[in-house]
Amino acid sequence: PSDGAALLAVAEVARRLAPPAEPARAARLEELARLATSLAAFVGAAPEPPLRPARRLPEAAREQLAVPGSTGPIARLLALLTPYLEPLFPADLARRGAGAGDRLSAGRAPALSGPLEAMARLLGARPHAAFRVNRPGVEILIENTQPPALVVPSGLEALGEGARLFAAARALDLVGRGWALAGKFAPRDVAILLELACRFAGAAPPAVGLPGARAGAFVEALERSVPPSVTARAAALAPAAATELGEVDIGALAAAILQTSGRIALLAAGDPAGALEVLKSGARLGEELDPVTALSLPELRELALLALSDPFLDLRVAVIG
Image 1 (tube, rainbow, N blue to C red):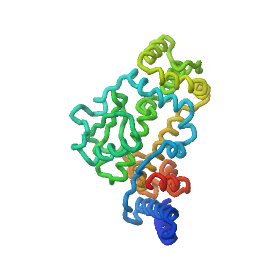
Image 2: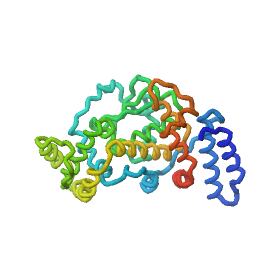
Image 3: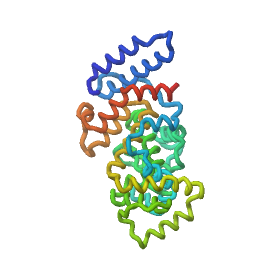
Image 4: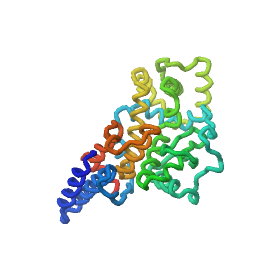
């Protein structure tokens, strides 16, 4: 994926082969050409092609992109209960350097608010609040305030629209997966959180560190806040989730969730160069990486190869058509 000349050759061949008399095949080859050109742009071999964000993003398409482990019973239980778990662990937004005066709106910092609003509509995202803070970097941080907060660094404004769409989509997808807690807690604390979710749902998970004296209070708090319909869905997941909790590597679970959200964000934004720029900027804090070196990192290489794969291309054609 770092060979710019080869990528441009792929794009040229795809354009030449696109048959005008076969619109579906032509659309597929034209999208392949655009994705290959975007990757070539990342390594400096071509200008960025036009953006083509997704027009729809059905759940079935998202499921096809999911990394193994990211949509198992324990991950689904976490996503289901996360709106009720978050308030049990109060967060202070000030620790992120954000306050009420930093709230993003349609008329403030449109380069940031526009992508967030567009991706929130596309994803059907959870209610959230967004804040712009003056700091370098491109990583959108998530806090479990009420509603969850997205803390957006001003450094993201320097990137192109495709990168901003990718960063917004990834953060919003992560909000729905419980990342406000799972992304900031240590693995042992995430395991305790999952044990609590299983116990509330009626299962008997292995003890992973939830203090007995506090477990009852947490469960009672959930019983007061979780609607009966959600409780019933949690109960259906609980036995399998409790079994999985005894076997899962929490670090691997977190990595799978993060990788899945990156894949879905790439499908939504449709800009491999922008996605890779976001990942490159956050790969090694304080160290500027050239694109070819960056593509040797597993996270970036996996996403670049995904962008050129047949299954991803099929999904892209489906969501932009």
